[in-house]
Image (cartoon, rainbow, N blue to C red; front, side, top):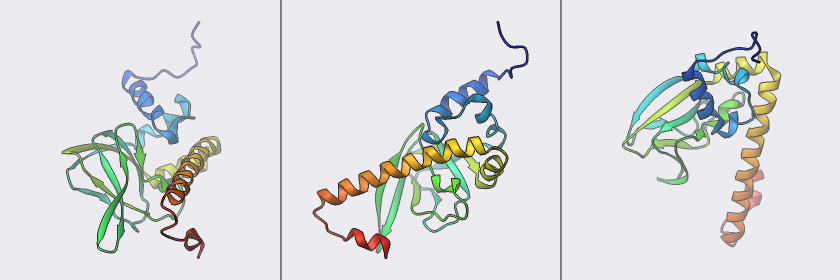
Length: 171
């Protein structure tokens, strides 16, 4: 028997929860936790070669890819090098989960168009401040994400036979 006091969600809400579960940073959250983000989410459409944000910009939002492809790029001298390709069901701008962070890469739309869901940083921080459990779950996911990135970085470094010094990371 259904609990008469439990929250009911619209079909649209349930579809959004299913989509959010695909994304690393939301995978630990229950529906009643994810629902807190829904009012703050807005969709934006981007065209091919449109920059979502530049490296060193303030981290003002988390982006979720509903449709399309976005390349995350770092600038090396006068060239851009793609470090990661982001597709449907993935997020980028993850350091917006942190306070006072700046972008570490440039995000460029590479598909003909892209539909992105934008969650503003200030809303994320308000949710974190009022619900430490949500913050703990999402920060755990962020830590795992960064740990996986470090593992890939070190594997790549070992395979490149040390064309750069890892010690430079800490100088």
